Image (cartoon, rainbow, N blue to C red; front, top):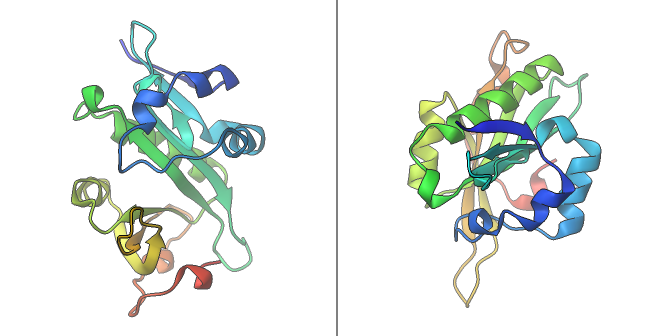
Length: 189
């Protein structure tokens, strides 16, 4: 049985199999520790029965299966207070089991409890598997961010979709009305 639990510092040394995926953005240990210190409720782990991490999100980290990392940010006055998915990754051997959807659901629940208007995330335009999964979870493309992801080995930088899902506080769904034109990374607040 998969166990969802809070991320701990020790997990930083256990999730390499998740972060080695070429579509997963990786960060230095100080970055992960900052999330753990500031937004611990958004950092969760999925652990397999044998103790391996399945994945994480920057709201959830899962033991060798999947993880999710997130945070709350924005302005309440401007109706921009929201949950942000910093990272969501599931180890290849644990994909297609619904773990990513469960992690996203948990992040959305936390964002609802914190009074967020929406949840957003950035995903590579080329990552159609992820884009389609997010659409199935109710997210839509809010805007395209030009050259958001840095390329390696001389290739051009890659665009990202800023995808959003309105939460119950956004009764008029204003937060998900798509922008008619792309933006540059420096234009993002």
